[in-house]
Image (cartoon, helix red, strand yellow):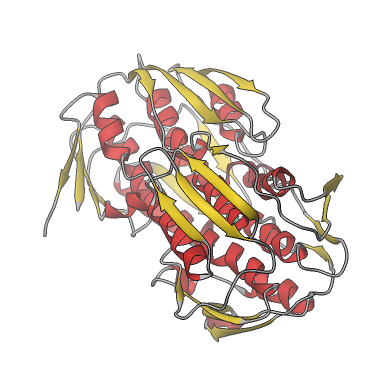
Length: 440
Ligand code: S3P
């Protein structure tokens, strides 16, 4: 499937984004191991969430799907059972890494399999701490000594409590260790080099687990999981990011997003867009669980800026779309410390540098695992998503501001996180700005 994108009219009005995928994974995994029933709503249409839902069914949780909600009847912490088949994670890295943490504490073995792109992504980062806790994990070996899926997790109960300093800032690795910590013989602590999204900590507290944050150290106490009652998911900030940057780049745009997740560990992009010159306002309703609220954005002339490596974790999934904003801005943008962006669904540094270069952006790699982007005019051209949902959506937004037509090849991957993306964009940017073409 290709998307053919032509210059947009100003984006206007109130736009909707799908429910948060990252929070949904955590809700499903923990609800499955809790005693009692949990309703999750609205249910995200993202493929990745479906993977996690199917996985917990294979572990014995029962699931009822209605138009309003997905209801999970948990089996209690001792009730998960050995799966009869492979646990297929598709391309969902969060499903695989978080499930590995959960499975580490179960007294059985399970095989986690992955699609072609996830089968090349690094897993030593979770295998190392989970092995130190007492699980045994078999993995396929790959280039440069990396360990990759499929993984066979031979769990054990209880696990050994661990104090672990993360070598990379990764919410997925932190979460795998914290989830395993539920079944450890004492408190488990993870120390982060930089703060990453804290959805797992919030969800654990919501299920009655004791979680302590002391500076960069987060500690989880083993203990029972209580069903949390209905979980109403906020809108996914990472999906909202594409619409916000589209509105920031197309002069005359003015958009409002309601009910968007505004967890402070996720919304760095809002401050960055403000510094770049967009008029952005947001108001969070401080909920006990996950903050959410309204974001209003009005386009303004954008200017480049420099970000440090320490800024990266707060906008890890927004970096590809930020590169598009930078390509539309006046002056130079410098981004550093992008190493983690190279091990996502694709090497996003490479796919974005190549594709934005094709659209006429002056963009180059620098020595500090970074990129420098000289803003200017973009020209429509054929570009490739590299099979990566965030690259595909970023390039579609670039197409809205490029002269002429931009064909983004391979856009079916947007169903991983935001299947409605092209419909929402088409409605906001004016028909027929975006067309999808099925090549069969
Ligand atoms: C995620 C954490 C991030 C992010 C991914 C989802 C999560 O990955 O890129 O899309 O839900 O914990 P890393 O933890 O590998 O940086």
